[in-house]
Image 1 (cartoon, rainbow, N blue to C red):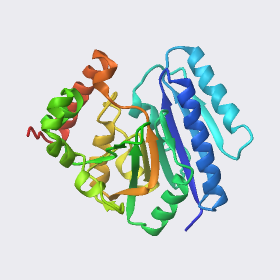
Image 2 (tube, rainbow, N blue to C red; image 1 turned 135 degrees about the horizontal axis):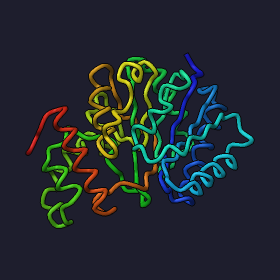
Image 3 (cartoon, one colour; image 1 turned 180 degrees about the vertical axis):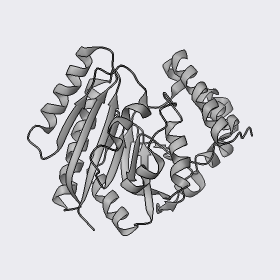
Image 4 (tube, one colour; image 1 turned 135 degrees about the vertical axis):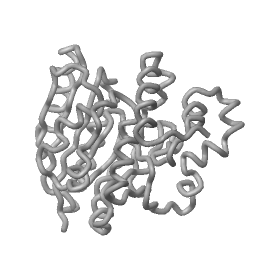
Length: 280
């Protein structure tokens, strides 16, 4: 079945430009490796800027052109549509090219050089899997939770807002929520049936996208990836594949101010209203 075609979307909102440059550099390296390995043919990249400042959009365009001008990657730029939210912005191109796969990527995530090679070789060998999530570490090399079990409200409160001493007290509970019992094993192993996948890096097959419709735009920010995970798992298999590696520098809604906390709570209410409440 190889090689395959890929559509990538990156949504920015007043991004950290040096970090965004690293994201683009890492992505370009991974794309080149995948094309050289003959696991990818055509690649379309959409840089979608939700910033209200036209100058920010111009810098995003400038960085994209500088990095991909002499490559076979087809790049398109969308801006000037105001801040419509994370999921709604990705949806602008989620159905755009009819590519075999779509990669949702954060502007603060750096993919490993072999990430796409490993991802598409794995997906080609597992045609029954419709969505893939990678192993994710932060900037210090500490593993983040790319896959999680269905969250209880208590899990979210502890993980997002509790002070460190209280988190340590509930360490075993949080580890269970973050699937540490199956993720933190040596040697690492693939996991089928991931309840909740991270939107920092998520690859989905075309059929899975078309059958689920992509992100629900009613989630302005936060929980849009959890909601899509639930709907993806209803129609296909999902997988955690540790050979696909990503460094993610974001997260931590509570540290970003009260506006982000409000978005987090609003989206959590919408998520539980749709999929069912679990308090403890």
